[in-house]
Length: 117
Ligand code: SF4
Image (cartoon, rainbow, N blue to C red; front, side):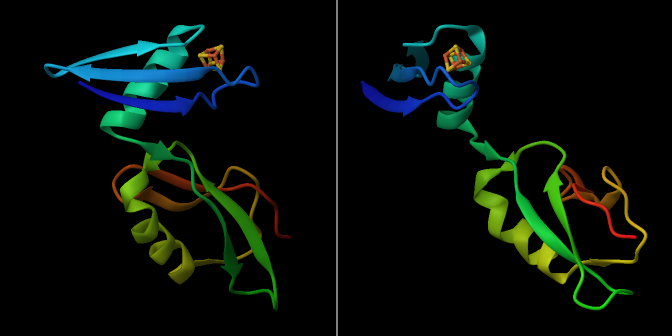
């Protein structure tokens, strides 16, 4: 039997979760709602994170837009994602919600979270 403990980060309540793995079956305790159970199982089997960063605006001097992945991506691929984000640039104007890199790592879009006029 293997147990993993973690804090649920899905809401400010921050429930202490325990995942118990026995005979290939996962059991979650400590959660107050179903979101906590889903989060705990995802953390043990396929952890994901939202990536936030900045991208250079090529046609404006010393200008960057903030960006984030539209959905969490596979945690183990975050460095690969950052390499693509660091190599990317965009031309102004940029509006919040614009897609900066479509289908990043074949997982989700990278979108702007700030404007550049
Ligand atoms: S288990 Fe539910 S109530 Fe508890 S922190 Fe997670 S989301 Fe919030």
